[in-house]
Length: 417
Image (cartoon, rainbow, N blue to C red; front, top):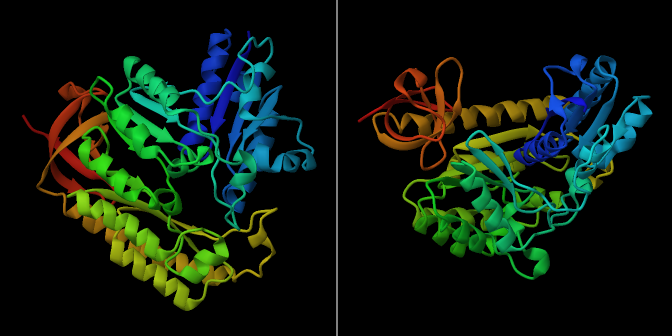
């Protein structure tokens, strides 16, 4: 039996893949150890979303190769840029996610191609509903790793959700490269139908929907917003990455949606939900972005006021069309990133400040630092409860709290009877 060490970088989908790998390894009798130096095999599950991440992955792979006898590299960078590891002279096996369990010494695990399995991490159930996307963004390298959308039937995903709930999941995280296009390859988008059926399962739980590109959910925005309004089980939270407030830049990015369509998605949820959280992403410094384009992005941010915002400087990724474009200088990208981050922090801080003094019904999700507990309210805002264990609060508990303060990106809550 092999001793293994696994490290995961990137998104929730990657974390779900790692949990699936670990489950199959444990079923075969392998067991985890504390640190690569104690392992027979180290597994590195990689991300490659930007150039800085790529460099970090190569550096970490080299470090792991020095610390363990056998290294397996998997994940998005392995699938999209596997040759990068060979070109560095790294002694490692570069494999797809499904190939890892069988590659571990003496593995007797299920064969590849059996679909994407759910995993339970404490009271958090990670349910990848599909792999791949339907986009063709000019800057994206991840699509080379994940391919086009492959959606299992609704019934299959509902059964996986049921299994997670029966196993103790209290928060279901619906994940995928683009959840909004679930079912597209079979003729229609059916994310709203899937969520409706999951929410009708027995049990007390919450459901968080992962990233959905605006184009994918635009066509089902009314139906999707209606499902959110109907089911308390759904966190009132949507992650729709707009990437730019300029239609010219969106066209150069090949993002498939327009600023107006993004607004229409937001309007559909505004019309049905009294309070909800919009999460979105912006890429600053795309090669074609002008000062006016950047101003339009800032204006959009101030107008729609998302409460979770990821700001990323454009980074050329090998093999993408955007990598062939003449880029903007690093100083320009840095200045625009700094300006947008300042606006972001002001918008997010105001949102959490508005919570102070209110009461919230929250789900305790996982331990925080010290004796604190990370909780989520109905709109998926993070609420920290201090001295939680001393109060008998455990992951999976639902409780009412009064919001007593905030730290810009999360709130503090005091339990109330």
